[in-house]
Amino acid sequence: MSSLVSDGAVRRRRMTPRQRVARLGLYAFLLAGALFFALPIYVMLVTSLKPMEEIRQGSMLALPAAPSLAAWVEAWSGACTGLQCQGIAPGFWSSVAILVPSVVLSILVGAVNGYALAQWRFPGADKLFALITVGVFIPIQVVMLPMVKIFAFVGLQGSLLAIVTVHVVFSLPFMAL
Image 1 (tube, helix red, strand yellow):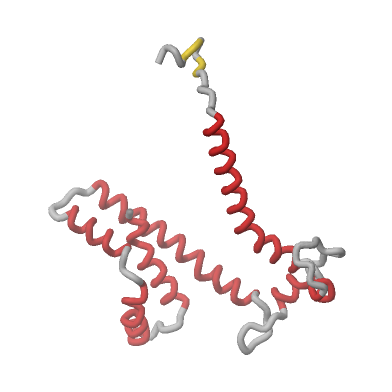
Image 2: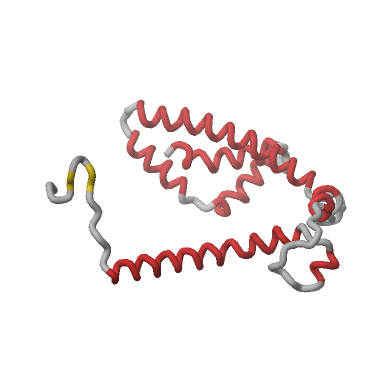
């Protein structure tokens, strides 16, 4: 250890030529992997900024000659999704209406649940924790039909409350852990 330390600093060992080649190969592989996954995102963004005439010319990787957000505006307000041509704005806002209460309630209930399980030792606490852990691995498809039937019986089928409840219930095992 004393041979590595000199005046409070740690000396680095020199890399061998074989280690340098291996490191360069690793960096080349990581760069190729990053490009492999980033290229479709680049093409999507660049294409979304081009007018239709420029897209038809076929040069996917070329930057747009005159960038425009017209396609974004059309998608937001006028694109046809299903039978209606209202754009993606209504779907976006309904997703936000589901996301915000689901996340807030999941965090609040999960934090209280996790704190109680961590601090309150009672007979069978380990078994209860094991059951909650098993709950993480239950596929949502297994309980979807019973939940739909329960919500239909109670009169909440298709409501925002039912969707938020499903998200909160299925996130509780994760949150408790």
